[in-house]
View 1: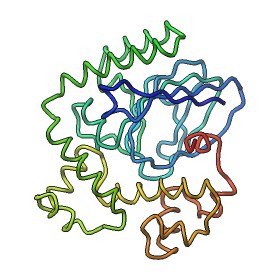
View 2: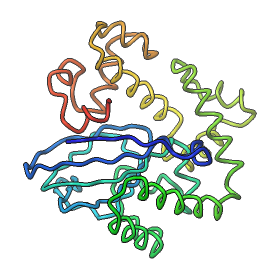
View 3: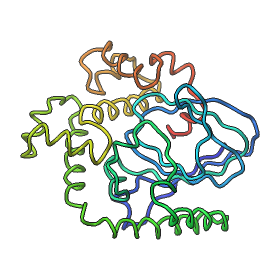
Length: 270
C-alpha cells in the first residue's frame, strides 16, 4: 500500500486540507474500519479494485465517485482487488462551499457524487482515467473545484462564520457550554447549533468530541504517555469519559485499539 499527500494551490488552501492518492498493487482482500475524522471527502476510484461498506448490516459496493459524509460512528469497509484512488479531503466546514444541499443529509453514508452533481463530475472522472500523471490529475480536480466555488460564492459569509466558530472551539476543547460559545459570537445557542450542523453535518458538541478524538489518536500513536495524561491533554476531566467517547468512535477501548491498528487507519495517521 502507498499513500501520498498533495497540497492544494494557494487559492484552494482555505478549502482543501489536502489531496491524496492511495494505491495498492495486491489482490489480497481485507476488512477494515473507518473512524470519524470531522472532515468530508470525495474519492475517485481509478483502479480495477472495489470497495464495499456496511449498509443495514450488509456489505454494499461503493460507487466509482464517492462522497463521504460525516462519519460519526465506526464504519466497516472491505477491500477487493487493486486500487488507485484520488481523494479530496475538505476542512470540516469547507465541503459546504461546493454542494448545494445541507451537508447533514450525507451523514454516515457513502453517496454517489454523480447522483448529487450530475454529468460534470462524470466528465471529470473520465478525464482522470485518461491521464496517469498525478500533477495533471490534481490540476483537473482544482479546475473543477474552482468552478464549483465560484458558482456558490453567495454562501461564503455564513460558511466563513462557521469556520471562525469552529476555530474558537478547537482552541479550547474543554469548553462544552453552547451558551458560552454562542454568546462569544453574538448568536443564540439554537442558531449556533443550526448554523454549524447545516454547514458541517455535526453539532457543536459532536465536532468538539471528534476533534478531541482525533487528537487522542495522534497522542496514542506516539506511545509515550499513559492514557490518563492523554485524556487530560485532550480536554477530558477523567479517564473514564475519555474511554467512553473513544469507544463510541472506534468500538474499541484505547488499549485494544493500540493492539489492533488496522492498515487504513495506520496510513491515515501518517
